[in-house]
Amino acid sequence: MGIPEETDSVLKTIVLFGLAAVAEIGGAWLVWQAVREGKDWWWAGLGVIALGAYGFVATLQPDAHFGRILAAYGGVFVAGSLAWGVIFDGFRPDRWDVAGSVICLLGVAVIMFAPRSAG
Image 1 (cartoon, rainbow, N blue to C red):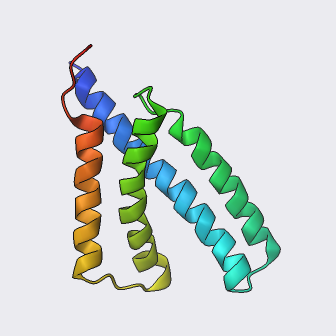
Image 2 (image 1 turned 180 degrees about the vertical axis):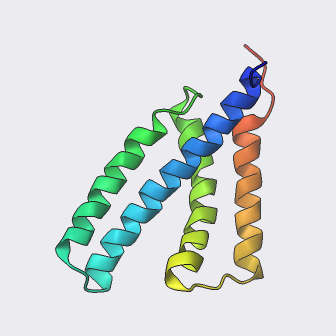
Image 3 (image 1 turned 90 degrees about the vertical axis):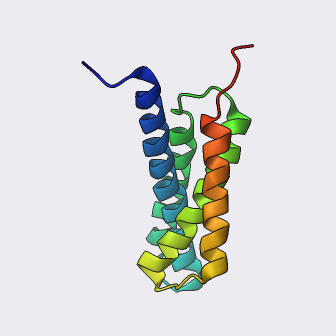
């Protein structure tokens, strides 16, 4: 007995959003490190490659609607960016950062997983 198709689709969506976040946020962070923090130029080059990979990861989502995927990913980006800052830059979000992230992730869930009619 395998994973139900609906559950498999939800898991795939979540994993792909996670990969997209690592590619986009990580890529932007690498460019930031080169430009703002004086790291070697190749950090920016790796960042550009990661940002390009993000564009391809988004195309692997099960939903076929570009606008829906990118709108929902925006919420993942908000929460992921704050988490990245905590992990890599010592950023400490305040309660408003956390509340905003939770609101964004609730929006992601509504956009991606709300029941829709077939028509």
